[in-house]
Image (tube, rainbow, N blue to C red; front, side):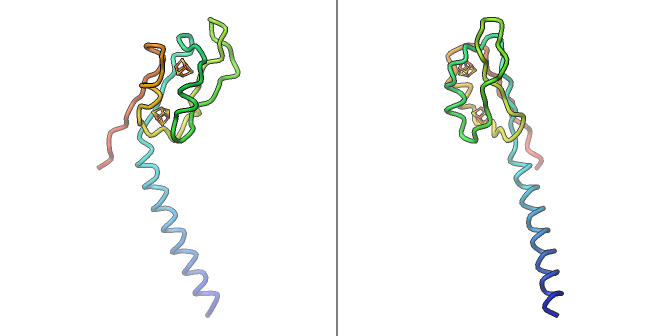
Length: 100
Ligand code: SF4
Ligand code: SF4
C-alpha cells in the first residue's frame, strides 16, 4: 500500500516535472548569433548575459581575437548582449514567437 502511494507520487512528480520542462521550453525564446570576425573579444557580453549562455571561443577570429560564442541553448532574448556590445553588427538576437 505504501509502495503504491509512493509510485503514484513518483508519477505525479514526473508529470509535474514534464509540465515544468514544457513551460521552461516555452520560455527558451531566444537565439543569439555572434559575428565572430567582427567581435573584439572584450567579454562584456559574456559577463553581462544573465543566464550565462555566452562563452569565450577557443578559436581565433581573423583579427586574432577569441570571440564570444553562444553555447546553443537557454538564451532568453533579453537583448543585454546586443546593447552592451561596442562592436556594431557583432551580435544579433532573435526572439522566438510565442507558442500561445
Ligand atoms: S539575449 Fe540575453 S540571454 Fe540571450 S545571449 Fe544575449 S544576454 Fe544572454
Ligand atoms: S561584447 Fe561584442 S565585441 Fe565584446 S565579446 Fe561580446 S560580441 Fe565580442
